[in-house]
Structures are given as C-alpha cells and as structure tokens.
Length: 110
Length: 184
Image (cartoon, rainbow over all chains, first blue to last red; front, side, top):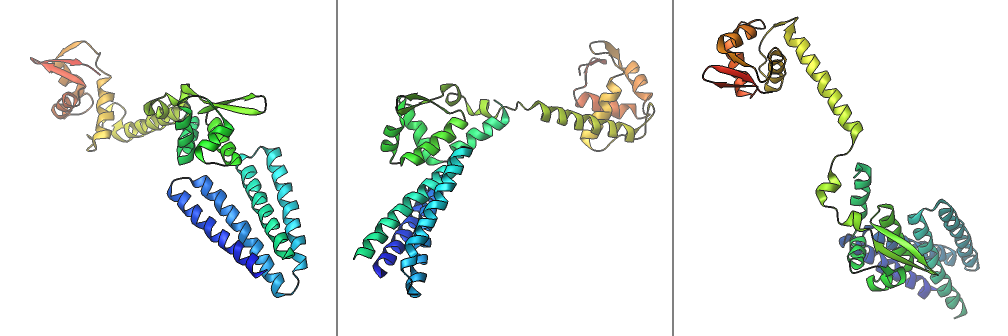
C-alpha cells in the first residue's frame, strides 16, 4: 500500500509540474485541468494514508466509490447546465479517479 | 462589432491552445478527433476549447454522422483589429455626450451673468466653451470687419482684444486683411 501511495504522490507532483509548464505556455485553461487532476491524486493519497495509519484500509474503496458517485452527479448537473468548463473538469476528475481505483485494486491484490 | 462580443473574442484568444486550433483550421475544416490528435489534446479538452471558440463566433461546427466538423468563421477571423475595437456602444456615446453638455452648462453658468462674461477663463477647455458661446453671435460664412467684431464681443466683455485674438488662435475665426469670418 505504501507503493500505491507513493505512486499517487509521484503522479501528483508530475501533474503539478505539467500545470506550471502549461501556464508558462499561456495554456491557462489546460493548466487548471491539470491541477484538478493533480488534486484528485493528492486527495486519494491522503485518504489512503489516513486510513492506512488507522489500520482501516478496507474503508478506502468505499470512500473512492462515494467520490465517484458525487462527481458523476456533478458531471450530470454540469451537462444539464451546458457548462463547458465544469463538464471538462468533472470528466477529468472521474478519469483520474478511475486510474486511482484501478491502481488501488491492483495494490490490494498484491 | 458589438463591444461585448469583441471582449469575448479577445478573452477567447488569450490562450495558446485556442490560437493553435485557429491556426490548424486555417488550412481548412477538420474533424474534432483529428484536431485533437494533431494538437495533442484530449477529446474533452478539445471539446471545451471548441465550445469557447464557438461562443466567441470564431468557429462554426456541423454534425456529420457521429463526428463534428469544425471550420473557421472567416467573417470574424478576417476582421482587422481596428474593426474589432471599433466603438459601437451607443449608450456610452450618449452618456459621454450628456456629461459633456452638463459640463458645458456648468462652465457657462459659472462665467456668464446673463449675457455678460464675468471673467475670461484661464483653463483652455473652459475658455473654449466661453469662446464658442460668444461665437454664436456671429453667422458662419459672413464677413465682418474688425470694428463690427470688436463691438459684438464687447457686449460680452470689455477686453474684446484678448477675446478676438483667442478666437483666431482657436480657429473659430479666420482673419485676412482686417476681415473676419467665423468658421466653426
């Protein structure tokens, strides 16, 4: 599980670096999207760290599922409002979360 | 172009990726997927940028079965910068005119006592308003000799020499061989 958390932290750092580079290239909207993805990895790593320290790693999967439900609902709301930026942000969050969940499942199997 | 629309265009163009998209579309219309691939953008990011470009009127789109084809809106992209920033805001023009009229009225009330000019303003903007008011007593295009000009100006203020000279230097009158003609 330590490896899983470290991997998320590494992805978070790489994405933050990428966001800074995008900002430097005057691609501000994409920099925001990149930071959003970075935050997802950061949040998920923190959730896992806290529960790992408490010896309650089985709760992590449920929390990730709750994130997935809430962000899916936000995406649907953004689509109803035809809010292009929010749609993009929610899609990015869900995409990053799907990657986290896949990595988490793989780490649990090990 | 409407000012708000122009602001939308400028905001939209303040992003390198959207400039890249416009640049790519200059060679002709393109499928969204192809554009995303060519510019190294994800489908959702491209879709976001295209929405912004469409909102600003820079790009048009049409559906072809499952795909979206994008094209430049040449009517907007061919405009010169001067056309985009051309002021077409009638409300603001009206407001500016009203402010100008109110200021003019204030100056006239401060410097005139009925038909008499209390004093000659020192500030050029105020002096110009006063001179224009006096100039209304002259018919444009009519030739006046110096005595007639002095007599008319003297009705407003005893220092007609200064006022007459100022009216010439401000281009309100032309003077040739002692003959005066109001030109504005």
